[in-house]
Image 1 (cartoon, rainbow, N blue to C red):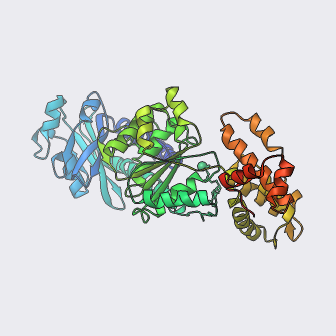
Image 2 (image 1 turned 180 degrees about the vertical axis):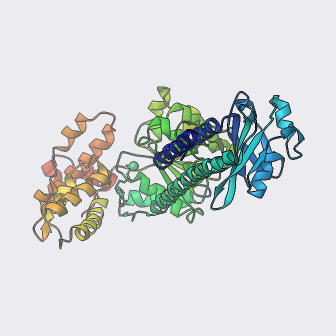
Image 3 (image 1 turned 135 degrees about the horizontal axis):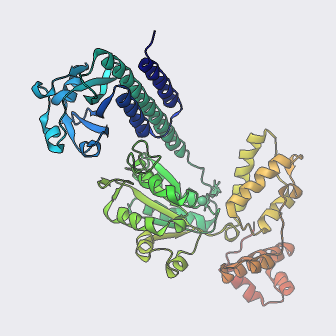
Length: 501
Ligand SMILES: Nc1ncnc2c1ncn2[C@@H]1O[C@H](COP(=O)(O)OP(=O)(O)O)[C@@H](O)[C@H]1O
Ligand SMILES: [Mg+2]
């Protein structure tokens, strides 16, 4: 027959087991709970749970209960030193019911915190037979000391605690694997299509910029290919074989961004169960691409500035500096100068990032890229949809060339993906594209913050090009139709680089 106290111990063990199997968050809280149960059930005054740090060859206090618990937590014990140290090196339990006369006893800590221990029970926490920590109980309540029965029970509790730690470590391992897989996926670079002279010029600039370690700020509307340019800078740099880490500052909630970028140490906040590497550390030796930098909160802007200037930062919840060798590329579709004026972006950070600004023009200003990109996306989605499209009908191509593409290459890509899904003919038809081709100027007027001169020039290019096409590129005829001087038309053709397609 089991005694009442044995029954309580069994029930407690079962409860702990359920907790271990359902707790994937706070390992520290779970260990404290195990220690509390063991302390209560073995009727002792105080207790501690120490973990082995193999690197430093010492034990540290993960948890300590009793009146002096909080003071004890600041101490460490060398492996082999004192009773806990002996248990850790011998991987054996020990009952000491006459602490005063025990040679092993380390009086140092007890004296320092003024906590006299009379009786003690210490058992190893074993994981795959290796001692990973020690649970100590101090001062058995009532008369008499700890018994072999107490020792047997405490060993069971200690093994449960070890199991909980094993689970947490496995979970962390899986998390790290997911992280490194994500990084490997990040190595999946895009194919870069470039036909227009302006994009090829930018690529030439990038060849030179890539060789340096300077920060680069990529500017331009959304969907113009800023991320692809960042990839090219990395791939053409001496860092190409090292990681290229992408972070979208606008996509991560503000509260998590600091830990995502810089990592955190265990216990820095409620869910920080384990130490975590941030994206800056992941990018060490390589390049980090900070997309939507205009959305970086002010508090992190200061931290980023320090990384650029001193190459060091602190993890969340830590005082010690981490040093990294990372090249920083940033991108934004916002007008950062306006953000600086409004006090939403630090001017010192802006100047550091803006050492090498590269502006990527919108798709409507480089129509030469449209057919190339369209063919590229057609091949891609033709394979995905398993349809055999031969190409675009001339009407469809014309439609794409005269559209303003406010969403730039991303919009073109989506448009062609949709056309591949919808299209039924051998050739993609105009109707498959679903382009709302509103007159160009009307659309421009509806949008604020755009450069009017650029918009008018783009309109001129399209308008003149159409007129020239209708008149078989006869400039005299075209000038008549447009009601302008022939000489003015040829100047416009030259200045706006209008070419026969
Ligand atoms: N030159 C290009 N060649 C091939 N694909 C491109 C090119 N430029 C942009 N894209 C495609 O367009 C989409 C948007 O590009 P992205 O770099 O994310 O734009 P941004 O960062 O400027 O918003 C991506 O899916 C990308 O693959
Ligand atoms: Mg982007």
